Length: 598
Image (cartoon, rainbow, N blue to C red; front, side, top):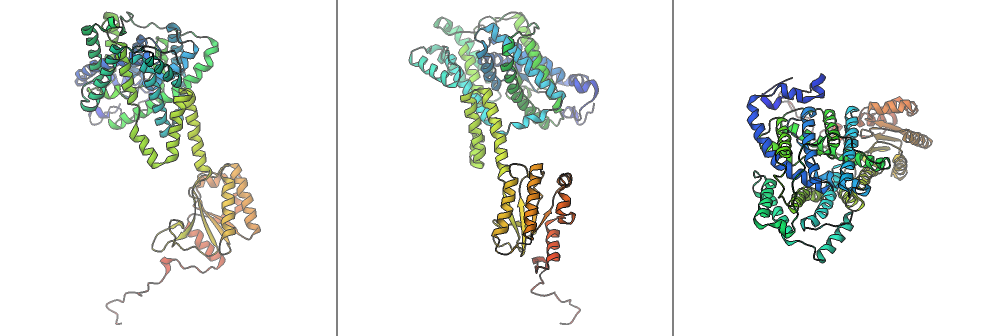
């Protein structure tokens, strides 16, 4: 282990052997006594947020609130041993709650016992998928979620969560499943007089408390204050007698290990749901982990991050919990409270365990509308209005991607919406590569290099030479377009074209379809007595042309390292008169030496 410049460099380079697979051993071996008080205090502060948030997200996922605590305790312990980050907190996540509900409710999750079993099976499958991905080093798959898709997904999740919690906030329940049906049933409930005013008052007060403290006093844990306000309101105003539902006494004791049972017919929907959850959880966790590592001057192994996340989900599923991810809200709380190591979340896990064993009734008066308020404020935090506005201003096509992801998740359902958004993202990439930017190049006086004549209208073109730049790899979708563009530029030129030089620096690949199209173009140009050449083509792409037997067909002497050398070769081969601005004589003439008479 390397330690440089104090605790901030504890993970300066990844360790090998057992410590590479169990980073908690490395943290334990390098633990410092000076961190102990900070870790203990931070753990207690973190607990105050872990308990209500965990129960709230369980409720949002359609599960009993106690499962949120089970899904908090076990993953925290698993990640403390296996996680490469010293301060990241794992647990139930708002972005996954709607996904879990969307998977388990149609499979019979209305029954609490069935819901817990299905959620546990979903977590086990999610853990296995992520664990295998970590072992196989497949973290790059998360790159399929572009930034607009992530923003749209989170906004769709936020709206889904908000609508799902509105009935609970108002003190009643609805039967609808899906955004539109839930909105319809909620409006019917409101118009039918089902709103419990006391429940609504509690819920709204919780929202106000959390948002105001988040906006003006970030150092004060708004969730903890809201919990205290809710419990106090129930005790002072006897709200349970007014129909406000409370959590009640939690089941005493710790979760016991058990493999969740489910019907074989449910394996397909569970597995597809686990894939979606795994993709989102991995994306969130890797981004947060790398961001924390950068801030703290540490290095984390991304594949170990996947293995730790997979193991934590697997453990959650085997101990009556549900799928979890990293927490972008609880992690900053731990850091701000002074966390120095994974002892902080361990303290949180132990404290929750003691609460369940010694005082399961401590939160019995916590009103359910207050839990709804906690979830709603978390959902509001998922909506990044400024980022969406920036997308709209900067690139409309990516704003359309955001809109598609948002509407897909909100209207089609979370899982289908995710996959539709990913497909649209890939389709947008293909669209840009299908019809990429291209340019005819010319020589601008007093400016180095060759430039797009559309952007530099005064640029001069070399007589008889077409310099053409294509800003994308050549592949099956754009090869025909490339060929047509070259033929069109040759036929529409004001002077006969003798050479076509492709400025190929942006061409990073050529597939077999494009190679066949190039061969056809080569033959067509030769029939018209036009030479095809390439400048700045990368070595690996040349290797592709050699394998396609196209390199020799073009001619080894028709590949040039720079556009300038290609122009010189053209001028020498054709005898074209061309004087570059750098070669022009100085109109003022040479400055005479003071020692030579004029």
